[in-house]
Length: 325
Image (cartoon, one colour):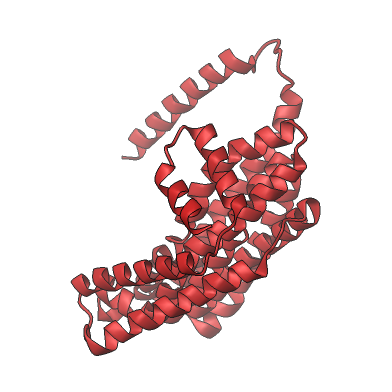
């Protein structure tokens, strides 16, 4: 098995270097500024390695200080919390080309507008799922993994808080990459990694997997807060608090409906009931968001820009936005 991995990685590295050399002339005279490319990309490579390190640090120290059963419980809570990152990954992939295009043209006002809209979209999309993870943490762990995993509910809530903050901070890493602040990204990630390791060593013996969740959430909040502060003072995005209030109000209203369903109709919960609750919650949330008109004309402009850049047909969403504007 080990030999197979070595052969696979060696062949992959060989062909990778072969094609890179054809493009950038790594081993000869190159028409590309390799020094600039390395100056930009090497910090990102190191930051990515640190990010991967942090994703395994908590599990490693739980296994070191506690029993294997706690590793299993923690690793049940962790992926549930990290499902929130789906929204950030999706919007980052759409926004990256627009940020690069606007930056190349010197259109900082458009970058600021795009950042403002994405912040609201990410908050609006992640909020309902965050509320479900927090309110139904025990139920979700019991339904997906069994009653013996309920002990990870507090860890799930804490990890969900960190993951939610990671999402609502917006595409801050993409923004720093756009402004070529890759060394800054690496320095902040290094600081966060050191904090993560230190907190894990200190808190896990005292608090168990709850301490590991605190360490992971704290490191996520730290790097996202620093990146957000830099992006905010560089771009000055428009944070319309009234819209965020409408999203929260919609989330609370949908949550009350779901709690009513659980207590009056679907108690105790089964796996099929979870689908009903999720559907009722999302439909109620969407209804409240539309009725409260929690979006603006800027949303439509950014949607048109996405449509132009990606070729996706967003006519259905545009009709809904125009109807409720």
